[in-house]
Image 1: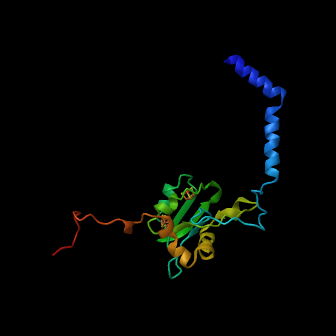
Image 2: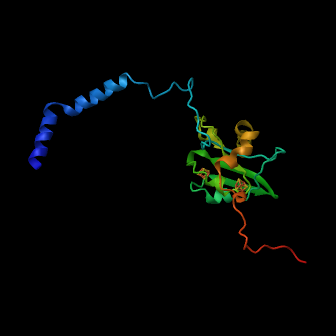
Image 3: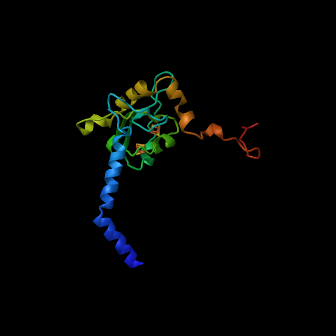
Length: 179
Ligand code: SF4
Ligand code: SF4
C-alpha cells in the first residue's frame, strides 16, 4: 500500500502533474466570464436586508426615536456603541464602526425600533473619525437611506418575529383593571 503511494508520488513529480493541472485551470478561466467587476463604474445589486452602515430611525414627525435607554450598547458584543443622556434627553449616541461586526444585535435589542442597519456599504475614509458615527451622522443616514416606505417596511420585512406575531394564549390571565 505504502509502495503504491510512493510510486504515485514519484510519477506525479516526474510528469509535473500538479503544475499541468494548475495550468489547465488557468487556461480554462481565461475563456470564461470574469467574476470581478469594474467598481465603481459597475456595482453589484445588494441583497435586500443587507447589513450595512447604521442609521438612527425617525418617527413620522421627523423626531429621533431613540430614548437613550442604552440597551443596544449593553448587548453589543463589540462594545462599540456609546450612549449618553443629559437632563432627560439623549445627548450623545456614537458608534465606532471599525469595531462593529454587523451582527444586528443592537437592532434586535432596541424596544423602540430606533436603530437600523441600512444597505449602504460605500463608506471609507483616511482617518478613523471619517467613519466614526455620531448621532448627527446616524440621523442623516436615516434621511438618506431609509426615508419613506423603506424605513416603514424595514422591521416587518427583515426583523420578524415581532410582538404582534404572537397571540395571547386563551388561558392567559389578563389584568382587566379594578371594578
Ligand atoms: S451590529 Fe452588532 S457589533 Fe455592530 S453596533 Fe450593533 S450590536 Fe454592536
Ligand atoms: S437605539 Fe434603542 S436600544 Fe439603543 S439607546 Fe436608543 S432606544 Fe435604547
